Image 1 (cartoon, rainbow, N blue to C red):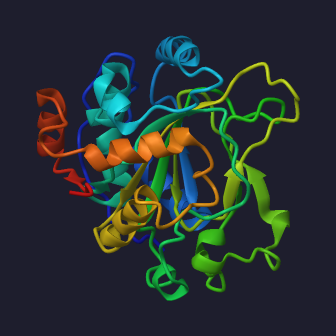
Image 2 (tube, helix red, strand yellow; image 1 turned 180 degrees about the horizontal axis):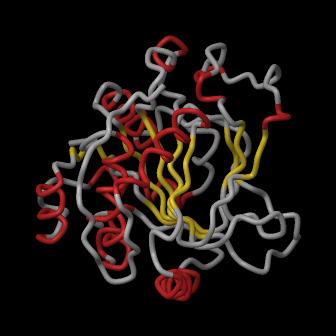
Length: 288
């Protein structure tokens, strides 16, 4: 069963990007629906991967492991991924049309998170209200996901369709972890997953990984059905009414959240970014 129809579009080349035709999209739609995730390889070239790694591994030192939303908007090599016409068209094809994008885009270094779902702002009934993916996470990984170094995600395949999971009171004691897999993402690939998917960071078996983890990450949704739920969740975290047990452990996350709160459209975006947003009909969901 497909939740989403085929949506035709053309892909324009940008420097460092690979070409994808619309005939490659149905398998990614099916994978997202069936497994809860899909991996689109070679979104950016290996040359661009190495350029980004060289620059941002240097910038993200031990005391600064992530960039804020404003940092992303200020660096063309990052916002040209986030607002790449190729990337937008690929996601639009998979989701069946234009989509919503949220202000929590960031680049993280060596952040490892235990088993969780990304919809703690939804009730069990809300999470089960639609079999199709609505809220989704997107990550561009800048290294291969290997047992030795980690670098991506482990997931319980199909767990986005578990109807007995309460995201607001997460209990994983009854989960069949025999379905755990390491998602086979490679450097430069785009991983998209249903936010209801039970997943965790792939933890390296090496005490000192030979390749540090870098990931450009952002949140999208197929519709605005739960947009206010998610924006209220971000707002509560920003105003310290709620502490997310996964991420809100350090000052660096608060810097990121405060950056999100300051974003305004169109004032916070440059002409190039605005042109892409308007051309592709992106629904930008900000706090104000």
